[in-house]
Length: 286
Image (cartoon, rainbow, N blue to C red; front, side, top):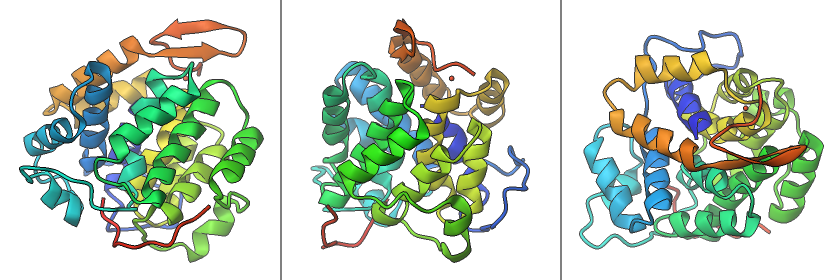
């Protein structure tokens, strides 16, 4: 979803130069798309066209080298016979938002799509759970569920602690790349927001894996608040000029999406108006 890509671009500046403030230039001149955007576009391509998941993801990533792929995933891209590697890294959640957008009328189908595109790499139970929780939160938000309802459902279904506020999380939060310690925080950033931009600012202000936390929070916030049209246009024109394949597949994704409205039937391609924990057995990898 565009929420993931814009969150990725905004957060990219602060992944290694982390901040603990919401006061920053939203579209920094040094911003750029990273692996989060490429993988999100790849997942859209897989689900839109029923393409083979492992080789399609590899194809997209090989076409966009040098955009900060994680260690194990960076090797997986080039494997002749790609196999999952028991990862519980947050790359499971940052790329999965198209599953919610394409199946906004069927939760079971959305979660099945999440499993399909996650298990090819992040088949650890925590990786699978992190992706599912993200899709579930987006799905609920797209149907008009409020923050309290989303918080309660995600906490009950996935065992995540969503009781802390952003201000309570921020002081002690450190860089982390695992689902267990990024997905709950990212969802909280969205649920506590009053706009899409506010959610992304929340995510960056935690001072963690900024681009990925924002890429997870962004789609939830998009489903809750929508994204201003000029913000999407700026992302396309300023940061994706050299990635027309990403822009093209995102256009097709929204053209095929059917999002419900609180008081009416699904609308084709229209975003919402404005729009138990396992024991980790392997190191995380994006």
